[in-house]
Amino acid sequence: QVQLTESGGGLVQAGGSLRLSCVASGRTFSRMGWFRQAPGKEREFVAGFTWSSGFTNYADSVKGRFTISRDNAKNTLFLQMNSLKPEDTAVYYCAAKTLLFDPYNYWGQGTQVTVSS
Image 1 (cartoon, rainbow, N blue to C red):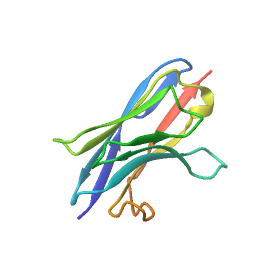
Image 2: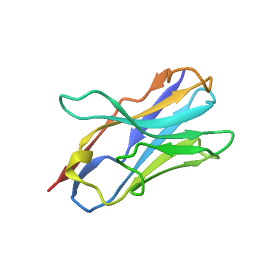
Image 3: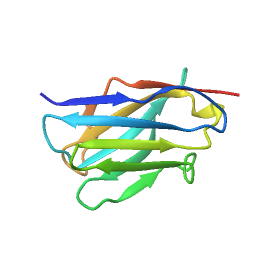
């Protein structure tokens, strides 16, 4: 059974940092990523990591502040979030896909990140 389990969310002041973790189990994936959804808004892409090549990409809104990385041995994906802003407040979801050019087909339960001003 495939599971993506996120952790690391919480409440932080603007300018602070958080690190999200996502432990993947049940199978291997071609690519994993982080998405977020703020109240009243659609879910949006934050960052992605291609497992085989290490290729990463980011939404423009988080470039230079967020870093996506992995621990291959622990099958864990991370999102280091620095210089957090109130507009980063959202539920953050870990996602994974089996085929590189297909949509993400596995999702975690989400972890809340709240940034106070």
